[in-house]
Image 1 (cartoon, rainbow, N blue to C red):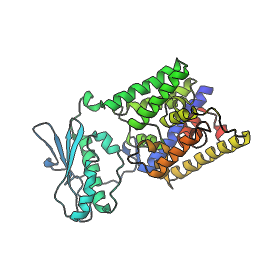
Image 2: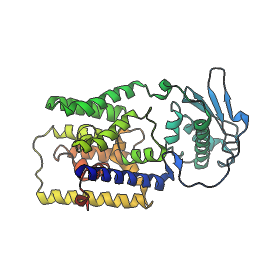
Image 3: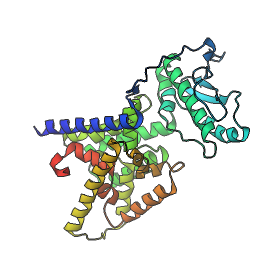
Image 4: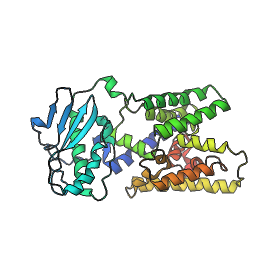
Length: 361
């Protein structure tokens, strides 16, 4: 009966994520939920051409003829080889040269990505060249969608992400997912926590967050390029069904790992009264339900972009997020895992999926 309750709670949590995906992106597993009823105009033959070296070129002139920049259409040529985008070139357009020059910085954002990865990307426009940016992004979406439907399927090896950091990250994750089940060693735990933080966090920038979950539910999951987050999801949602509660948070999460490591630097912790801890736990529950309300009603789903995990992607994270992450890491020297215990909305979902619902009401 207890396991059945856990399964039902897990299903309920997945439904919440599904509703959030529909609310934010109007998509579910890559399919548009709301059809606009418009007929798609059949593209001309030159929309897709193949070069002698096998590179496929998608021309968006007719695919995105309704997508406008500041001065009109912003057609692109998208070069795809072995399932990955090689480059994107802008075709002649009527945009203001200075503004378009600034917006053209976006053209390299998709390089090296598979079609599926590129479609799942959320690319922001360039400040000061908003209309031209929207034109480029709109053309890319149209071209990538066309490529996904028409470009010949790539081989299994082409689908797999075989970059060094991905392979190393996969090994580290498998170690964290398996070895602690059998080995209870403090020395090994320190070693694994370091690997989690350095490899999974700083190097790979891979973690579970609300933004990641909603993105998967919205755009679908490509198992060939998302093995690491898929395994993370298994440890977060499936392991608890077999008695391993909080396994992901305790043994894998990069942010949890660095907090644990910081806590090991000081054995003298601040003593908090039982009432203080209860108030902080109550704060966590109130925060969680408030964020759920804002997300599910569509009032403010952007809060997902401010989870502290984003600090691991430091090239795009704001200084505020990075500063807050540092503050919580320093605080964890004196208070065990403060972000995990009293704030983390992602951890709250994991707890909710494996805990009696009455404890969260």
